[in-house]
Amino acid sequence: MVQQWGIKFAVLLITDHFGKIVANVCEKLLKQGPLTLDLLVRYTELSTVHVKNSLLVLIQHNCVQPFHFQGVTIDESKVKTQYLVLFDNILHRARFPKFMEIVSEELGDKCAQIFKGLLHNGRLNLKQMVDRASQEKAEAEDTVRESLCKLLMARYVERCPIPEVSIVEEVDDKKKRGSKAAKEFKAPVTTEDRVREAATHGDTARFSLTADTGYNSDEETKPSDISVAENVAKEESTLWRANFEEFIRYLRDKALIENVRARMDDGAATVLRAILEATRNKEKQVKIEKSVPLPLDTIFTEVMKTENGRTMTMDRVKASLVQLGCSNQMLYEYIIDLEHIIHWARNEEVESIVLKRYGRDAYRMFRYLSKAKQFCPTDKIADDTLVEKKEAPKLLFKLWKENYLQMEKVTVTLSAGNTGKLSTIYMWQVNQPLLWEHVLDELYHGALNLKLRIAFEQETNEEILNIPKKKINDSEPLRKKHRRLQNVILLLGSSLIKLDDTIMLFNDF
Image (cartoon, rainbow, N blue to C red; front, side):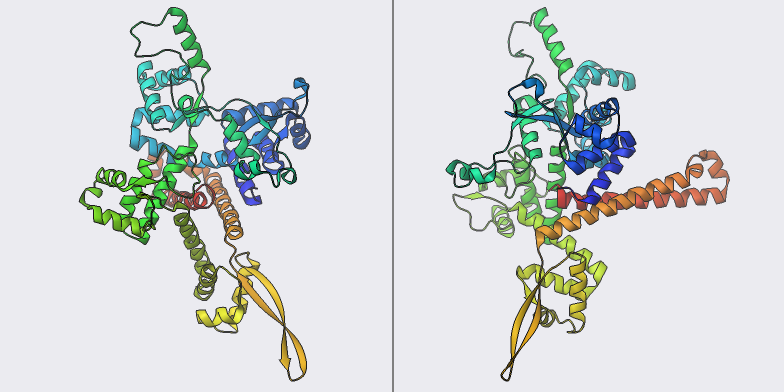
């Protein structure tokens, strides 16, 4: 469930891109969950036309997915379409510059131009891409097709999901309890997961330009005029969009590698990079606990493909695998615990926040409790972390009030002669899942404030920003004001980018 600051941040992004009416519809979906058109009209108090148009905009830009439950009613005309908001896809809109940079560096400017059109328009067919490219740089259709094929091979672009999917309404857990089939089958946790899975094409259709054309390029005979016309019609009906999942996987892998490099060394980072690259297309989702199993020879071959890896011997690769926690592997296949690396990075980030916000004593106690994994009494925490007995309870209560710690009261009887006296002992613990949710919501709050501050600076200094460059250069006071404003906006923008990297660590990885 998305928390309050996450919703506010997402609504601000939609407001900036599409205006308040579309943002109103989006906000109701974020707060209420999937809704029908009738309910959206009622909750937003907008006209049916405004709500329909807003939904079309959100669907076009991959922020909403229509679906319905099958088996609810026998009369198909009474089946109600529901609209599911895709929160993560809304957040990805703030990451478009990152995605553009990746495509530009890996595939070049021509692919970047095609990809830019998909980001700006949400969804395009091949003809629309060709028309757009011809208007901007007079690119030929073959060039556009070739660029699109490169993007599909890299999995940075995918076929748009099924327009509206049908899913089975979940059976009550109490009815399934004790069933052997239920124990063996792991159903997706949320409705969003189930809808996404149902709407996504298989890999062949998802990443192939010619999957539905029915024409085999290896055949000696040329296609008939009828088949050509059919293929053109299919190309015009097939919509393509950016594959956000692949970009998040790319950024996740980069973050994992840099984290290992900082904690261990370049050798371990090189081996991890080789393993992730070798299994890139074998992972079915971004959020996975462990890497795909690989034999040592395959890992060594992948390591040798990199510049740093060519200096590494087999023994050095084995030593790096031990560093990465792969010392006791069965069947000579190596698996890396990716979840452990991500959890370590999250803990390090939270500890950094505690140190900056509450000081070194609070940091030592928090870190002690993070490693303890259980409730500990105040006096023991103070003794083991060398914090003053009077200061420790104050700091612990402060962390508890700010939702960084869990607290329990334990009442014990102290014997004093023959009279029993009751005393309360405070026990403390770090609950990582709950803490990470809280920190993530704080990160959304910080991102929201930065976006609002950037907008404020741009709005209040609009006159300075719009002054012609020549006039600015001719006036020293204007030049100083303009430079100061640019530095402020640049600093705020870079802070927002860094904050988004941390948001991805807690939400997307």
